[in-house]
Image 1 (tube, rainbow, N blue to C red):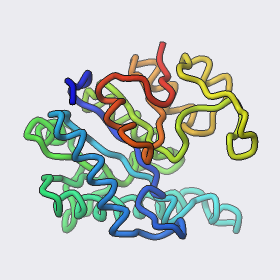
Image 2: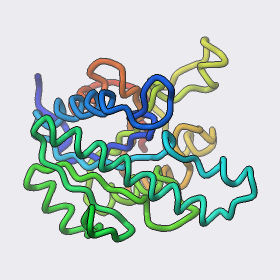
Image 3: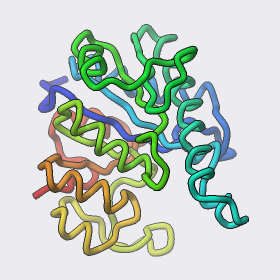
Image 4: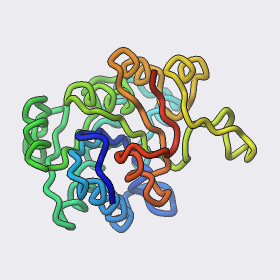
Length: 238
């Protein structure tokens, strides 16, 4: 199968990864499919931390469109990520992978509070650490939370797993002939204002020299190729 290039990675998943064909809610079967993909990476002896979005349950923009307070809408989104974290943890545990859910907002009855050194220790023991509730603060996306946590736990790669196989010059759903990039510098990605990952997350990665790979989670072996260091999706780096 090969030797992993990266010892520790942070995987950023959108909440839609856990949704069924309808695009919302949580499909336990879909969660199991995601868990099996993570298992393939774990089999390479790679340490995996995960940050999940919550688009399958709640989108803050929906609330804002109806006049909701931004902080309240974001707090609801943070809580929704914890629901997704618990669902994915359950799917991983059911296939024999030990997990720990840690959250930026304390809810001790269902998860550990996020403590950097404890998260690292869990990773060293071979557990998958799922980091919920974003940064714990409104006005920050889960992309930014993923970049921040990746720095804190000394991850060597941030993987943004989506349903698109990389970064395109235009929306490939609108223009099937749109150019796909194999590599972008951080500055190029910022100047292009790419929509697949927010600018705060890119800037944080740029300042700390952390490469980002944007890939299609559902493309066969895309996740494996990323941790093996093989070409897949779009890499954003210096």
